[in-house]
Image (cartoon, rainbow, N blue to C red; front, side, top):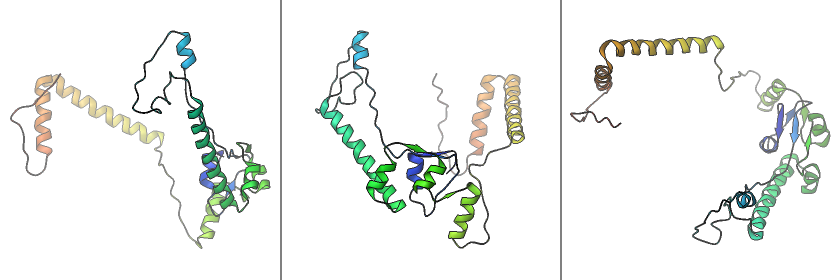
Length: 210
């Protein structure tokens, strides 16, 4: 785990055979919260009224303009608690601890990598190279290669691409200025037709909607 692997990051990591974290990695945040935007009071203060049309009694629950009902609030709360329970189960299974132990380190709190190791949330302190070496060891690999994704282009490569794009655009512009916009449009249509492969079924006209 790198700089930050909290909440969703830790959820993904916790199923691994072995977890590495750097000493300063922000980890943990084993918790769940839900937010439902609502501007009912604000809309009333500034004189905005929205009429709601629904197909069932729950249709307007997510409306920005209707006050949240106790029933809907309970449904949202139940969903949050179920998701939190699932998170605790993943931590319990992944770290080989009880649900109560997982909960004692959870509740949305965050830890440094050092504290996470002390608590048993991670196995070792180390960087990415350490984790890769351990993965190779677990896979019984003595020789292996590394590919980094996504592949980022250097500043020089991006410059060349931009120059090529600018050159192509300038060339097209020059041709259009020389033969006129209408003739250039016809030229593009002819070129497009010539580049097509196989049997073609084409209209004897070009539909141009403006």
